[in-house]
Length: 93
Image 1 (cartoon, helix red, strand yellow):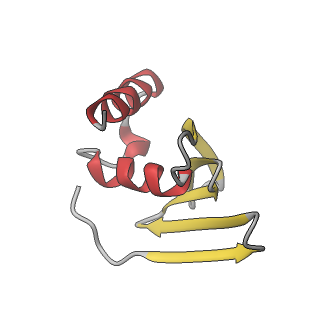
Image 2 (cartoon, one colour):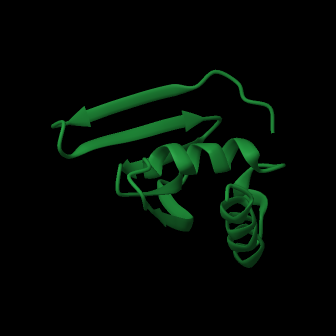
């Protein structure tokens, strides 16, 4: 998926910073600890929830997944999106 302009918003305290990435109607919402996709058209979270490990930023991981996917994640059946998530996570090891 090609990456058009990206908006990144952060808010909160340094110990509990929240982050939102937005690209073409899909947001990555969450904190450093956990993050998920959200459809901006329906305001509905969908797909896997990434829970961080080893100090990684969960919003950054989900953003990387969004740019790694071959198509808009809203077009994947739920089980295929979940499978793609695990393929992505395993490819990082």
